[in-house]
Length: 442
Ligand code: SAH
Image 1 (cartoon, protein in one colour):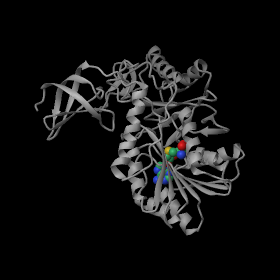
Image 2 (image 1 turned 90 degrees about the vertical axis):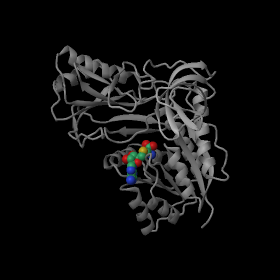
Image 3 (image 1 turned 90 degrees about the horizontal axis):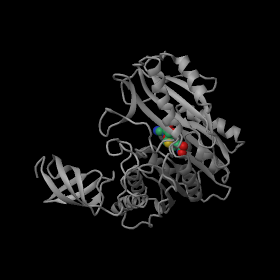
Image 4 (image 1 turned 180 degrees about the vertical axis):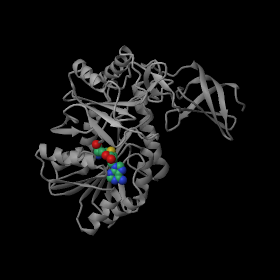
C-alpha cells in the first residue's frame, strides 16, 4: 500500500474512538467519518508497517445509520467524533465498545445493560472552555483535531447556548473597542442548568486584562444570569488551562445548581459533571448499585464537591468523601451544611493515602464507591481497597479501558455483578460506565 493511493474500501469495525476500520491486503486502514458496512473511496494519507490512515473522499454505499452532522465543522473539529452517526448507532457503538472490552478480559461477565442515552442529545454541556487568540483580530474556537490551530465557531451544538452567546459577545466587545487582548488565553463558562446561573472565567497571562471593568459591566448588563466573573492568572505555557490565582471581578465567585433534592455550590476550579441531565441518571444508578439499607458506612473516593456523597448519605449511616482538590472539599463541606446533611465527613487528600488512613484507623467500610479520573486506579489504591474489603464496590468510570483493567485486577477478590453504560457525552466517543462488584473471597 502506498501513500496517495486511492482505494475502494469497506468498513468492518470501529476503533475505540469511533474511527472506521477497513481491511485491505493485510493492512488495517483507519478512516474517520466512515460507518461500518459502508463502501467508500479512500485516499491513503499515511502508511505504517501494518496500519494505514485514509481520508474519506466519497461514500459509495452509505449506511442507513449515516446522518448529516448538525454542526458545519463537525469533521474538522476535534470535539465531536460521532455526529455522522444516528443516535441509535452511537448507542450501539458505545454498547459494543464496552462489551468488547469486558469480553477481551473476562471469560465470563454479566451482560452489559443497555446504555442509557439522552432524549435530546444537543446543547447538553454545562461547561465550555474555549481557547482565544489574537491573530488579525481576537478569535476563538476549538482546536482542529490533533493540532493547536483554532477553528472558529459561532454555535457549538453540544454546548449550552448562553455560552455560545457569551463567547461571541466577548469577541465583539473587544472588536468594537478596537482593543486586542493578546494575553487572553481561554474563556471558561459554567452554567447551572437548574438555576440558570452563569459563571465566566477569563484566563489571562497577567492580572490585568485590558478593559477588565468595562467588560465585566458589559457582560453583567447583557447577561443578567451571570452571577460570577473571575479572572484567572496563568503565566505557564503548558497544557493546563487554569493557573493557581483567581481574582473575583464580581461580588460572587461561585454559582449554585440543583440536582435531585440537593443544591450544590460550584467554584471556578472544582469538578462538576458536565452533563447535568445524565449526571442525575448516573448518580441514581450508582446509588442503586450500592444497595444501601441505612446502616452502612460508605467511602466516596474521588468525591469532587460531594455530589455522590450526599446522594449516598440519604440511604447510609455514614459517608466519607475523599478528594485531592482542597477547594472542592471546601465546597463539599459547604454543600453538606447547606443541604442539612450531617452524616457525611469530607477529607482532603490523595486517594491512595486516604485508603491507607482507613486501614490504619481500622474504619470498617461496607461499600466503597470510586469515581477516578480517566487514568483509573493505581496499584496502591487497588491493593488498599482489597485490604479494606468492603462487601460492595461501585466503580464509576469515564474510561471503559481503565475500568476493565482495574476490574480485572480486582478479580481475585471481587466479581463483576452489573455493568451499566450511561451516555454522558453524546456526539463524542466517550462513554461513562457504572459497575457493581461484590466480594467473593474474604
Ligand atoms: N464524583 C465526583 C467527581 C469525579 S471527577 C462527581 O461526580 O462530581 C474525579 C475527581 O477526582 C476530581 O474532583 C479530582 O479533583 C479528583 N482527583 C483526581 N486525582 C485524585 C487523587 N489522586 N486523589 C483524590 N482525588 C483525586
